[in-house]
Image (cartoon, rainbow, N blue to C red; front, side):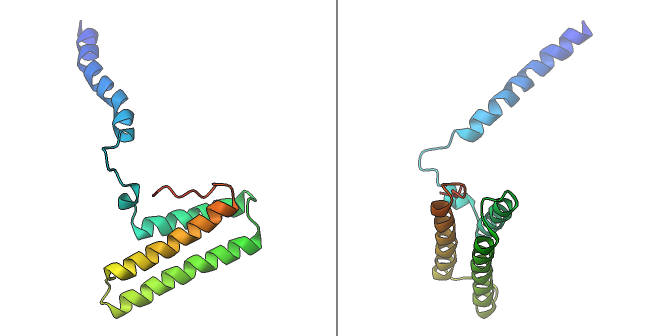
Length: 121
């Protein structure tokens, strides 16, 4: 009887957990994936994909160095802008940095058959 009680108590919890992945996939109307990715998230994702592409041989050393340098320049530009604004970016500066990151992702995506398709939209 005790096993049956434990099973009956655990069954609703298990059912809710089984539905959890569906809830994550169901996005409300007007969901904006880009809004949930910070600039740092984007930078980390791009660096991570870049390292993976080099490791699996899908890009060569020259391409890796070129893109890595681009990302480094964007990061340094952001740091310089923050230094002049007491650690904060203006909305315009934020848009500039995000646009540059998107340009890098778009170029890599085009050059490598969607292997770098950015998840933030």
